Image (cartoon, rainbow over all chains, first blue to last red; front, side, top):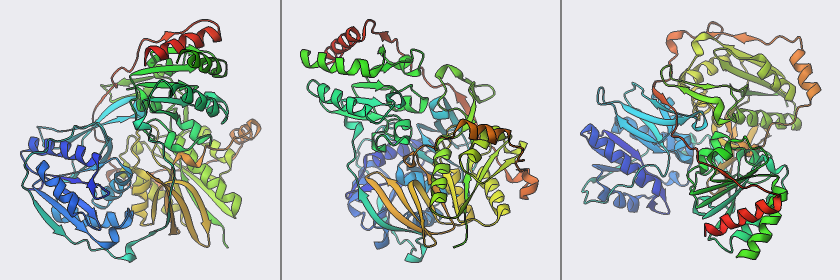
Length: 329
Length: 263
């Protein structure tokens, strides 16, 4: 029985961290259902990753290998996954709420006429009817909703860094090869080029100095850079973050964006400068160990979640702060 | 070349940037209560901005489509003030709390009624349910090429070329039209609308068409509600904030000491 199927993602030949978290979640659900879980992997060659998955205890690892599955071409990945689902016929399919899952999930849900819940932070089985209970923050994080849908196939994408990694046991599942029926005519969206950009890895920062609409202008980030520079003498990795509004205004690139649709982080210190704290931003940084807010509006959300606050214009505070830090460090 | 037809799907929602104190959860009724003005969902505004930029390059017409139980034309008229040519509301009591599938099905019905189109733009997700599904499902239902998370859209020689955000940067992709594109905030915020322009549009006598399920040829039985089993408030995120007082220089001094204490 294929009760739970997991779409794994392979990076540089290995299962990525999100996939391991999915394995943990899927394994628990399968055990609640008294059934098995399996993994499906797609790519040009995924043998190494398939071998890696086996010890975690899936009953089967389905390998969908095809030369056209080079890179993420959504149309071909979708067609392959749809075929696999129809053949494997799982009760539950889990995907990461990654850039791949975000695109494949809704499109697959449409093709298989199943309701999907995206970005889940908890999953369980309703003991009454065996259906998947999908817990998801809604309204930017202002509420937590549990969804339940009656479809034969239960579909969810799962937020990263929520589910615990499975213990590597001594699984002895089998590897099953499936041949995707795909060809070039199925490509509706053609890839012209991939442009790699320097991406700031905010989730690896010890300290994040973040700016928002309250900076008033793009140049405000220069002052934040100077503060980051001063802090880097006392702390490890200090990086620049921002709110969604700062990206919308074109002041800074979106890899710096903290929040629901940006990066979700929990650094040692988060310094929010001129960020009022819309809920979709707060959910991205509220787990920082210490939060420091600088804002002219004493009533703003950010002061409600901060440990230390300064109600003042950042242009007054930060240059003086940099000077004091230089003296003390 | 003939006029390009762009449809932008825009959803009216309670302001997602509202202060925390204005939001509460009615667990019994399973509703999020937001005591804030209604706005257009932010990513949908990004989608409209992307559409307006296309009209600056070529002959194009923008139709904004907004679906809900009841849509406020005063909120949506902002799209006309910003540069959309036409606004169509799709309203019906049956549209309350629809699931993504059914919302997409109703939008697909409205788009078929509109008839010709080259591009459909939606926000990457709505700021109320944060589901991120309607756009892509709509594309599947209409069987057109789908592109997710656009940060730049250009139309050249009958094709659309999109910079699509990917984890390592962006991918330039190309599709034949008609196509569906979901838009991310990297596109940039909706342009500034002058007060006079806004007032003129609000007071304008122009009537805004409103279609119901009947007009779209769909029945209530074809629509399904979101399957909400429970709704609750999130864990309290509040902390006791120590405000650092004094002159800016004194505040900066205290803050520097806070930092040094955290080393």
